[in-house]
Length: 487
Image (cartoon, rainbow, N blue to C red; front, side, top):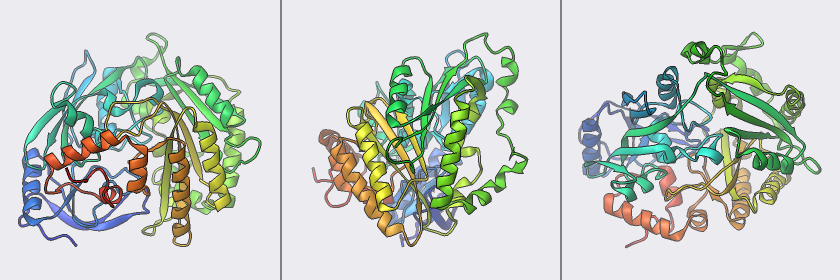
């Protein structure tokens, strides 16, 4: 239990804080500042009491990136004002607690869409920068950080600084993707993309196996705006890695005859029901099928539906419908169980293009052999970026959702340790917004040593008292990791 703060610099409450996947969490005092001055006061109070702070937005990281079993949590969602938007350039100036939803809902009626969005619209832009999120278009436009122009941070000392590629450049490249360990991002200035319709054109391509899917992506990535693949992880042998690929592109100016309507927010609203059944209750139905036999059946059905979809050719979907699949069924994660420390983990491996195909097939095979078949697999193509702790590679990622239960938890963790060795041997990396499991050995084995040392040196300079910590930080920073090695 962390010591109490000597004062109440912001509204606070003691509560259970968990990762989005529900498999990890702890009780913490949660403070909710609404301005820079309150954040500075929180920092000063926590430093005085020796209570480490973890920064948290809407809690969309799957694991322990925003939980703190040994201190307090700073919830930044109250700082959610849009400070400015340039209708000529599409540059948005935002407080850190603005969500992706808040950004796109402000931008789209003005003819813009965020450059990079995640599979859910609920992360804050400060969290998007701190974790350097990516989307279905990473192969083309890169990460959220690639389109961030500058950020304001409150440092552990309380100082408010601006960082960009021109000003405090080291801090800029370390704090984006820096897991909230160097300072609290309170303002984000970011670019958006000019669009001429509230729709995108989408085509489904049914793929016999992983090789066919990867070949299609490489053949079309120069002309596509988005490419993302779903994989049936139950399929083995011939056809391993089979699935459905979605190829999407923006509409050119003048193509949408009804652009004024499709750019309206009402048009982007996700439907409230599926086949007349309220979507808010769909997770209860999915829960009945949330076991190996049921998910094998659902994956087979989805594969057959994908084969039919591939014959339809191009169709149109709203930006929200195409991009935010994780929001399509509210609370779908509850299908994995609602007891604490159950739920799901996502294991997302990033492998170079030279090793990705064989490495992913090996990961899938080892999962099946261990009796832990992922219920969902998502394939994306990526490109490198310049940020210090980046997950990005010139290659691919495969994100795999595993069910967690009390009886399987320990063995699943061991299986994922085995998978981590595959990733390391293949020259891969990991994404901390999704990770729940890797330790300092994997961190050192997958990130360049000079970047780790530079990040550690900057952390020691800006936060000598260790004010900013999280359960993720303790996990990857144990056993003398380069992040905390003495100078």
